[in-house]
Structures are given as C-alpha cells and as structure tokens.
Image (cartoon, rainbow, N blue to C red; front, side, top):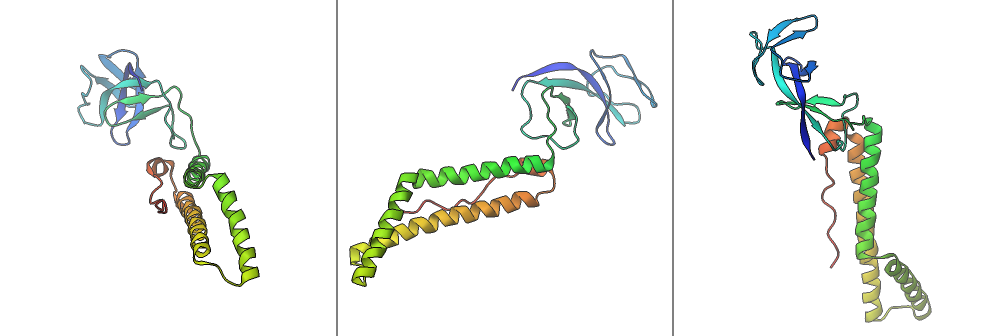
Length: 193
C-alpha cells in the first residue's frame, strides 16, 4: 500500500472527528462555529488541548472492510487517512463475505484431503462392501479395515462441515464490522492419519 501526503486536518480530540481540512500547512485555521486557531507545526494543539493539527494521508488500496456509516477519511490517532476507494460495507454484507470465505476454506480443506474422485470411489467401495456383507453375513478382517477407513474419512468430513457451521454461527453473532474485521477462522479439525 502506498501512502502519500494529502494536506492537513484539524481534529477535535473529544471525539476524533475531522473539523476542517486544508491542502497546505496553515498559519491560522478557522474552525467553523468554534474559533480561530494558530498552528505552527503538525502535532500542535490548541491552547485548551481540544484541537490538534495532523497530516492527511492518502492510500492507494481500499480497506478490506469498512465500518458501516464511515466516510472515506478516518483519524488513526496520528494522521487522517484518506482512502479514495473506500467502500461502505453494511454488517450483513460483511458477514456474508466472511461466511462465504469459511465455506470456501472448508471445501478446499476437504478436497485437499479427499478429492471428489476419492469420495466417489469410497462411496462405491462402501456399497460393494455392504452388498458383500449382506450376502456373507460378515466382513473379513481386511474388509473391516476398509470399512473403518471409509467411515473415518466420512467422520472427518462431517467434523469439517460441523466446524464450518460453528464458525458461521460465530460470524452471525458478531455485531460490528470493526469486530468482524479482526475475527479469523480457528481450530479446524486436523487431517486424519
């Protein structure tokens, strides 16, 4: 991400809001409906400590998620970050993006261990084994090992699906985009031996 200077802003430190922005370092700033403040350098505060002059920075890449209702500029505690590609994402839209990512991760994890053709082969072999048991009444020791391996694979796939559902429920329970932006999927079941 490239950051470039984009001027200066006066911040109201009581709520970190941007009061006024100017393209070059001002000597005096007229804060609407408040007062005139003389500034000599970045970081300088008004006599009462309520207002501070900070740099404005412009970034060239959009934020992954933005806070619903936020504008293209935000005060990060040091400077005002101006993001011309900022897109407001409502919470439901952001949750849906994360949930789709969880589903994709689960699918990729399953297919990495059990590609589709292996799943289909396991189903076919399970059907053959079941038919053989119906005819003979029991499985041989080797057939039992095959049945156990197929069942273990199916159990692991079910664990991945259940964990995906759990993670999706966590995402739905999150009530702010800011919290959602820091949430990461966790504790995927390990790959079967």
